[in-house]
Image (cartoon, rainbow, N blue to C red):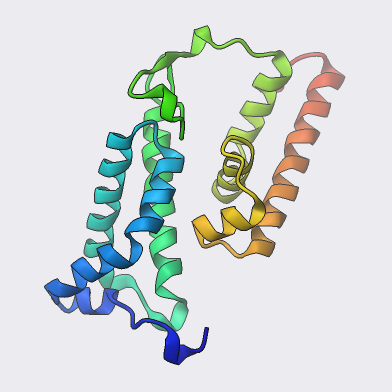
Length: 190
């Protein structure tokens, strides 16, 4: 899109104290943030809370945005993704529960981990995925658990398409290597 057609950034106006820019920011990025939040949360209420948290974070960090470093939508997506990952990690650390990310049918219920039946290979693969870098773990989760295409992941996260493909390819290769090592030794790797 030519620069003349791009909307002017709102974050510098917010950083300067322009209150009208806050509502414009919500109008401009509300759908994007809602979509991201729904893919990371268990319920509509959780998604609403997450979106509100992201907008507060954007308001507090508006002065950190620099148009010379990238487009505003990328900055907004990265801030949102990081906040959502932090929320998801915090939730997944609660003892005895497993977040049911993005499932409308789960509602607000938490499922006990002991009630989920998995094979040793699946458990080992999940451990391997959990040990990947943040970006690799995110794109693999969005691909496998949420069924997003590479293009969909790039659109939702703001990560370039080529980088999404590289993260998935390298992440899955790492998971395969760990599974192969576990099978060779006959037990799960620590």
